Image (cartoon, rainbow, N blue to C red):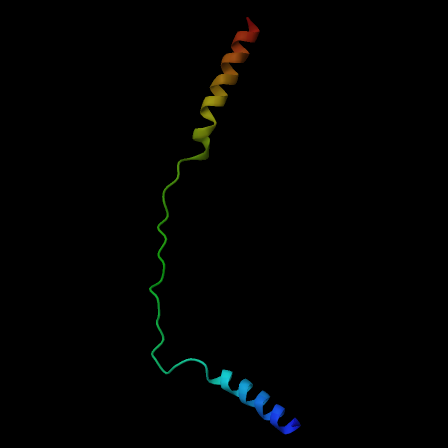
Length: 61
């Protein structure tokens, strides 16, 4: 009985070693990511700086 269990265990582990096929591997095309040009980070600072300047001018009067 022990030999039968041992043979069954070896048969199941040996069968998974041959998984797959002899077909040619499929190679996917590389993904090309195009970089987009971004605006300067200083563009986001113009409006708040103008607002601060206007508030400072109004406070000084």
